[in-house]
Image (tube, rainbow, N blue to C red; front, top):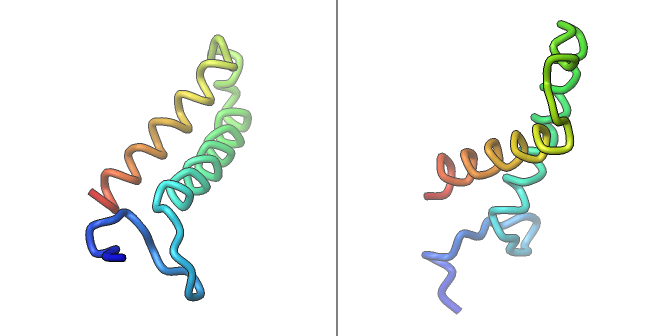
Amino acid sequence: MNTQHAPLFNLLGSYFPSWILCFASGVTATLLIHALFVRIRLVRQLWPLPVVYPALTCLITCGLWLLLFS
């Protein structure tokens, strides 16, 4: 199987899809941004939160994937 053009990365001898790494990084970054929003009291201004945080996670995940694996 030729994995030269596939968006995979080698982790301890196993190949994983790159989106898993980007998604984990996106969730982590969103959690850090949420902590920042709480600290500067901006979370009160964000509405609706069930839309804001998944959209932020998606934005970071897709941005990382395009930046690192495009």
